[in-house]
Amino acid sequence: MKEGSIFVKAMIFEEHGAVSNIRLAELPEPTPKAGDVLVKVKAVALNGFDPMILAQIPGIKTPLPMIPGGDIAGEIAGFGPQGPSHGLAAGMRVVINPLMPGGSGVLGETVRGGACELICVPADNIIPLPDAVSFEDAAALPIAYGTAHRMMVTRGRVKAGDKILVLGATGGVGVCCIQLAKLNGAEVAACTSSPEKAARLRSIGADHVINVADTDYVDAVKALWGKPRVFTESGGADMVVNYVGGADWAKALMCAKRGGKVLTCGATNGYDPQTDIRYIWSLELDVMGSNSWSQDGIATLVDHVAAGRIRPIKSSVRPLEQLPMSLQDIIDRQVFGKAILTI
Image (tube, rainbow, N blue to C red; front, side, top):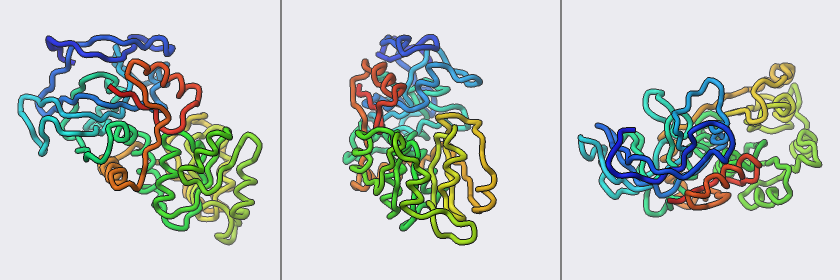
C-alpha cells in the first residue's frame, strides 16, 4: 500500500487471534497504480472465512496489518495514472469482484479487504451498480451469493421441478442457494437447528424446513420424497447441497436419488470426513465440487436484485466501528444471511 499524505479510517488487526485484536486505525490513503481504480467504500460484508483469517489458517499468508471484508460496494473516487478506462467514471456506483487477477489473491483473505474508507482495486474487477441496487444489497452479493450462483447454476444446473436439500441453510451461501433454487422453479428442503431460523427460511421460500435438533434429515427426506432406489430414479433429492462436510458428509449421500448430484463448495464442519463409497456407486451419484465465483455471475446477481427477482438477506447492518460485534455473531452462528457494515 503506497503511502499518501492523507489518512483514512480502517478496521485492522496486527496479529492473529481473538476478535478483541481488531481495532479502528488510521492508515495512509492508498494510491492507485496504473490500471487501478480508487473506490470510496460505502458498504462491506463479512464472510465465514473472516473469523478463520483472524484466527490464522495454516498455509495462507495474511498481510499484516490486515483489513477484513471481501465484499465491497461504493463509488469511484479516482484512477491511476492512466485515467479512466473500461467506460468507468468518477462518482460511478460500483461493486467489486473480490478475486484478484491472475490468482494473486482474494480481498479480505490474502489481500487487504474493504473495511475501510478507501480501497484500490484493478479496473478489471469493477462491476457497475445500477441505482436500483443499494450499496448494502450489493455488498451482500460477491463472495457468498457469487459462490452459490456458481455452485447452483453454473455447476449444478438447477432446473424447474428439481428437489433440493440444503444443509447449512442459514448462512450467506445457503440462503442464496434457496433463493436461486426457487427462482429456477425447484422444490427446496432446508436444514437448521433453530426454530427462529426455521421461520425465516420459510419466509425466503423454503418449501420444507427440517429442524435437525429433533429430526433426522435422512428420515425427513424419505418422508418427503421417498427412499432413494438403486434401480430406479424414484425417491430422494435431485440435488444435495452440502458444504458443511464433517459427520454429515457420508450421511448426506443417503439423501440423493439415483443419478442425483451432491454439491460442495466448502467444509465448515471438517474437511476429512469418513465417507461411504457404496452410495456413490450404487446410486450413480455425481459428486461435484464448486470453487469461488465468476465476475459474470456477480453481474447476473446484480441484475436479479435490480429486477426484484432476488432480495439479498442481511442479518445485520451496522456502522464500520462495530465490525468486531458482527464478526462475533458469525463465530457464534447467530447470523441469518449477510453481516453488513456501512461507512
